[in-house]
Length: 534
Ligand code: HEM
Image (cartoon, rainbow, N blue to C red; front, side, top):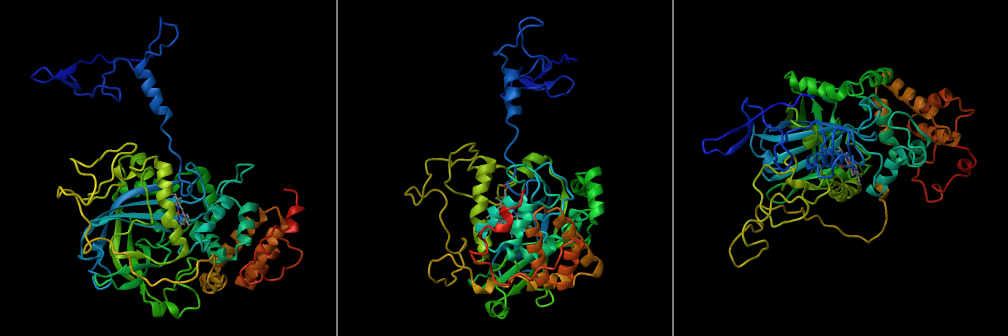
């Protein structure tokens, strides 16, 4: 290897600059020491042992050895971009959120798109839900809408999240499959979880194999609240609508693309933004009050339900434009930490039990993944507005309180204080009831909206759903699971159920599933399962 003969430049006072005479920066260690030879480790004689004294070698290898951090426990594979959110008109009558107060104002944003089930190195065109996580750096702190490209979810209560994710990830004994193909554990869990039926219809539809991130919708999923300056609340659901419209690929196309280019979605986003074709989404909101919510048979707190747009047309309130790729994938896309609990004053939560659980989970997971309670010191996670607090120390602390004071109140008249007027005021909803592990009767209907989705599809789209179900269930080796799934499909659409039963070669069409929520007894291990050799 060629070792460049470089001399450091010096200032007028003779001080060293770590720049060679030809302008090339001189290679240094992480401690700043200039390096003479980065090609050969320090050894005794030409063919002798390497010396432990070689601090340059040791530092370089040590750092390399520590390059990996845990991948996200879900949504491990993702791709992000910078941009901005632009407000269309002031919404001060319904929310005090500063980001919605001035027409035309642009607020910086970062978005990360992802698949859910696959590992960091998995393929882009898996049949899967896509994450659509938006961080808006408002003047009152970061607002994260941690959404998906599907408006509903598999489960109604966050306590089931580890189960649904365990069932879809590689099976613990064999360590496969990835997100691509069906397997018994996933369909076993789904068939025992009727609340997942609406989501399953979306996941088996073309929505789960998008053409690119640029042709996807995004949804906040849960019912949130807008709260105005008078502390009055309006329920709100958030939707991102792509300017380019919706496009998907067919399953046989997805399989081929995955083989030819597993980075197809990343490449598409990178190339579009580098070429100046900035993707854009409109933020639309569905706004409603308690009386409106009470008129439905279903519960607006149930994340397996939508409010049909025909019933409640969404209102466009702003747009999101992505116009810059990160300078560094790891620093930004990998280290960005989204958290549902990041809401500015004027935006608040509902009691959706999935959202409530998520509000606990994200802080916890970021500590594990990023390794320090100071993960907000990483530039991509830091607010872009002024911030003042007395949090200090800990691993990798980059910012500590300046001066003597690190508590409040204090007698020195120093440091920040709370503000009743401008601080976050939690919406004072009136809550009461016995402490119990219960699920409301209003969460019990699991089939109506699954049916609504199926019948809303065009005939070719319906055919794709039937084909996807047949393909996936044909990979399930346990007959009882296939039959149990078909018994649910019959409740969604009889023709669909029979079509899949026939395509799977079932000897007879099973009885439709009991539409009631399964009891503990229903969920007991089925004898049919235990006698099947897996
Ligand atoms: C990550 C969405 C439910 C726990 C994510 C990400 C998205 C997302 C988009 C990726 C964020 C990124 O790009 O960095 C959703 C949606 C849900 C849902 C829309 C339901 C409506 C849940 C639930 C839990 C959960 C119920 C747990 C109780 C996590 C965790 C991560 C994650 C632990 C990894 C975060 C990280 O390491 O950065 N979720 N999620 N999610 N989600 Fe969810």
